[in-house]
Image 1: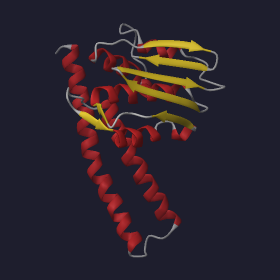
Image 2: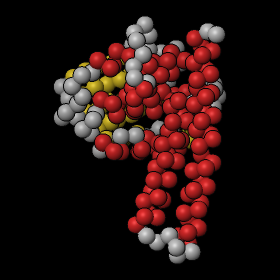
Image 3: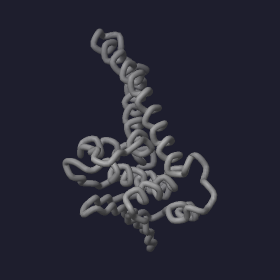
Image 4: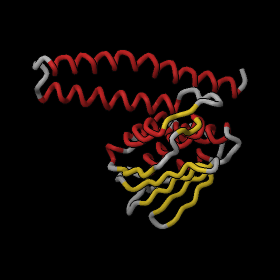
Length: 199
């Protein structure tokens, strides 16, 4: 099996897992709604379950874009991209500014979401992230008074020959591969309290 075939199988596996998780999560969400409508679900505990199901649903949709298969010609809607982008970094107070077009090729959206996950790894204390997807380019700019001290993880964006990272940082080599699928390379620019990724 070639490296390309292996990557395609892994992406299809990601799509399958996300597809199979969406249905039970949706069923749980529907059950919670029915309980709330009947008056049985008006409690702090039920609100916690409802919020958790909503968060899980959105996170799985994000995983499906970032880690799933992206065929040429497939498109993503602006609303879906913005919904997913809002979940990235929410726990770390990462503010994302992005105005994608009404329709964006899925491969472009995949690369953008993966780079947002890279931004999340670089901003453990929060910060601002601006994303621009235009003219067949993805540009992500991070600004924050404090970033991750060790940014050696960014080597995975450029070096295909290096060792694989741990599971929590697997989005870095996947971002590099997503850029390669578009015949691009990711460039990294560092400044004072600023990082920029362009592909």
